[in-house]
Structures are given as C-alpha cells and as structure tokens.
Image (cartoon, rainbow, N blue to C red):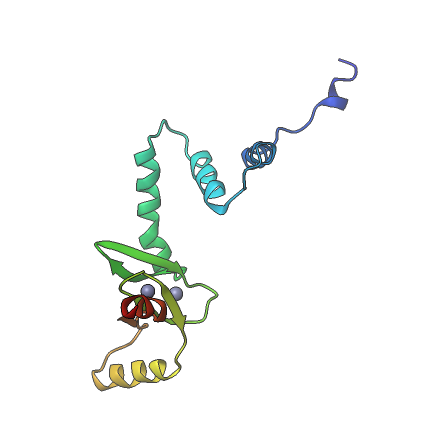
Length: 144
Ligand SMILES: [Zn+2]
Ligand SMILES: [Zn+2]
C-alpha cells in the first residue's frame, strides 16, 4: 500500500502513553505511577489490586537481601523502609509526637559496632539506631 509504511510509527510504550496522558491533563508523572505501570505491564494475568500489593510485598525481602533497602523501624505495627543503596549509612531521630524523622551520621557508631561484635565473637553486618524523643517544635507546642 503506497504511503502506508511512511506514516506507520512504532507503537508508543505504555510509559509514553501514560506520560502523554498525564501531561495533557496537567498531572504529574511520578515515580509511583511509573512503578505501578511497570509492574502491571510485567505481568500477563488478570490481576486484582490485591495481587499488585502482594507482589510488591513479596519483593521487599528480596530488595533487603540485595542491599538496596533496609527496615528503618516499626511504627504502630507497620514496618518502615528506606532505600539505602548508594546512601551513606545513617541513624534516625524520631519525634514521638509528630513523627518527624531526622537522619544523622555518627562515625563513632561504626566503631562501637565493630568493638561490641568483636567482644561477643559476632560477625557484624550492620546496625540500626533510632533515638526516640520530642522534636524542638513539639517541645514548644507543649510549653505554650
Ligand atoms: Zn515533633
Ligand atoms: Zn534514613
């Protein structure tokens, strides 16, 4: 067919379709939206939203094993995670009232980890420190 091949374009990828759609509707192309679309298009079944949750849930231990993410702390029964790959090891300060989290880096903790694990014959693979307390702005609210 003359002219057919000329006008034929490769089908846009699902991510391009989403990006165009969002742009036309003044919506943002967020990493969350991208991740969901990638997950959906990587499977070939008739899935429910619960299936999506489940596969994300099952991936978490894998990502921890691979050293990409780590558990930060338990928050009223929910585990919180953060991605650690490529980030300097750090510890957390957490406000009990507003939930604010501050990250800090304290080299002395790495020395402590080595010393304590050596004392107990442990082969250490990391540590986690969370300091709980009340942040400055919550302290102000309390005293006012
Ligand atoms: Zn606070
Ligand atoms: Zn952190």
